[in-house]
Image 1: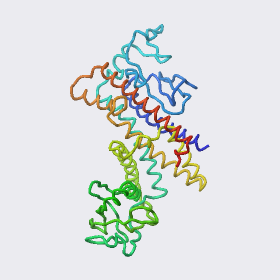
Image 2: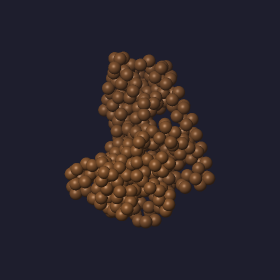
Image 3: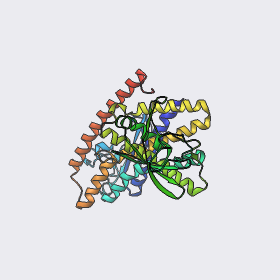
Image 4: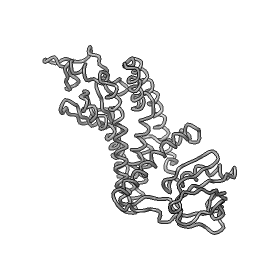
Length: 392
């Protein structure tokens, strides 16, 4: 059951993304040949208001196929020779019909670069909106993990920090190593930073600069982490108990929701940076199969605790994946929304559209490379799932 829920959730996130493109395309009168949920052959399909709506076999993916897109965007470039013409002289795309005048005027290639820009931006924006709204729900129910120190161990590195020791009630807002610097907005930020840099801290005996708030002042001190044999990692001797703070009012909830949302955006960007720098292997990336498996496992574990725990876990996963999808789609890579946004921006600057064959070729080649990469990721997911390494 948990796997079914995970698949439906992943489908929901992708559908929300495609709805962003769809609503903006409709606003600008761009012909949408088909809006589909899923991939592959159609299970159910119906033409409503001159757009075909389809539910397809494979629950992953979806599309908003605008006429005038290149093939990599799942739409149709305007090539009238192979399109059926009905008895009224309308061009017939499997029951979706348009006059040549409307196709020439409103197809994706014909509209202004500003409209192209907004249509492409709408998909990731919807993912960000979904992530923020669900983050709002989460923090309103369970609060936000503000990194306020609850205890400083006597004689610890934090107690012996220079020029001043850390104290109970201090809120950590920044951590800095000689080659790493990170702003801290929540306890999870601090935990991730220490985990990722644990080996470097121990190997090089790095000092850790800590920026913190004490009452109305922002202060800075330096801590020398020590090795803890019990936990087998670098420790500074501070603890955080009951760090989840409940918002006091609507504006407090908005502030915590924005921080929750930002945490997942920053985590996604950090992962990309680590991948580029070689600190994260490509075999550590999960595709749809891995994502569903991990989500299903998390849902199973949470449901064993309580129904509310399962719901909060599910909402957290949706926030994470939706924010991740938004960021990934904004990467300036042809065939992704980010690449199309770049093409639209170039068109705005030079005052004329790029050669559609060049743009279409770039999108198609990149899409093929992405498909090859996704097939490899899919294979890795299956291998890790069968070997038992996917879920640890």
